[in-house]
View 1 (cartoon, rainbow, N blue to C red):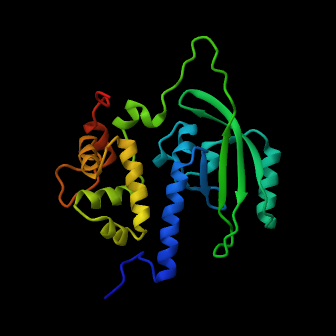
View 2 (spheres, helix red, strand yellow; view 1 turned 60 degrees about the horizontal axis):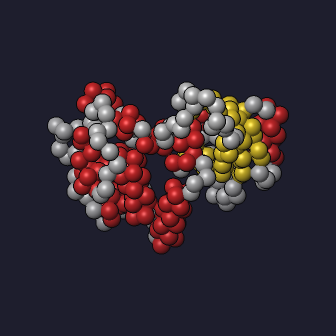
View 3 (tube, rainbow, N blue to C red; view 1 turned 120 degrees about the vertical axis):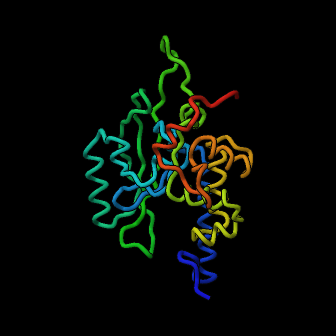
Length: 245
């Protein structure tokens, strides 16, 4: 019997997949804006707090360069980080940054820490973002809605490639273990992605998640086995409001 593509080779890889899923679950629950990027600064995963600080949905942060999301305001700090990466030094490096969340200018400090990885020549980066405290007593200013609670974000959701595969399989009736084997991640990893999707689409369980996905135009109602709808179809079929709370 041939091994499924992407499935763990043995107990060691299976254990690694389980621990990776648990780590991602903990990362997702962390209130601190945190992301992990490759050594060249491309985000591989970001928790909801990180995306929220940027005014984005989590699915719109992954696979994007950090320098596309944040603008360093102190080039000397950036050069110091670059020199440290080239020389292999390991420490924490602060970088002052600015960005725009929606229509609101923000600034803060990005802390970048190379993580030792024996399997990688260039270590991945653990990135945390501290948002500078903003004044809330200015006239005419109120509390902005969180991006994952805003009706327009639910009306026009986006999916990462991994989320799309998992959603399509679940809509077709696949169990968690089948999804895990097909996608090539652990069961905990599948549950992590499903929990995030349920939270973003405001669904209480998998059945409701699939129903919401069809209502929002994420899944093609004319296709079987289930297929993800093209982005243009999503925008035309998605409702214009999130409905009653």
